[in-house]
Image 1 (cartoon, helix red, strand yellow):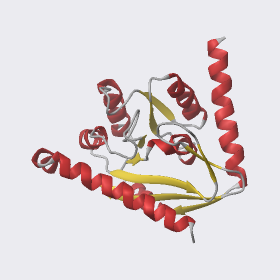
Image 2 (cartoon, helix red, strand yellow):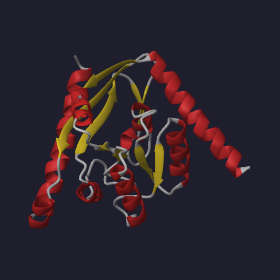
Image 3 (spheres, one colour):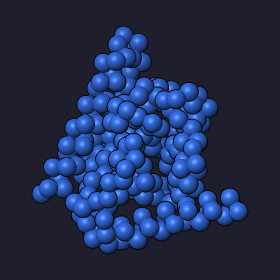
Length: 215
């Protein structure tokens, strides 16, 4: 019964998101960043705030991207949804002692899969970058690409991260900024400064997306 319920909820998640996005006008900003990385034969790490988790699985659909999902019950639904969207779920957290998840993510990056992570997950603080993404980047050699999704009309849910989902027939912007290559020497010298640098990259990308949605 539990398995059936999880299967039903994951299919419902994929179906609802896919149906909504069929009605939306989608604009990509900074898409040339990943196109250039592909030309270079380089994998990368999408870093998107936790509020975008549901939509991140949609915009990377069918790309065989490794996406981290928490070990919670909600994470199980998301993990199954990630698989239904044609990607690879990795269970755990990069910031809350998830060494096994980090190693799995690094292994997949080295095998040629790009990755997606929510660096303020699994429990925040909201939009505050945790160090896990830096070490995944260092260990894999893959740069960080900030990603953010915003809609002209959206539902904002009463969750810790104020999770967002576009409303039907809205305009949606998917914005990318970067890439940011994390240097081991700089992290050793001043980890806090590197965290702040990536934090600023993500904040500027949010502003870029919000500016594009208003045009």
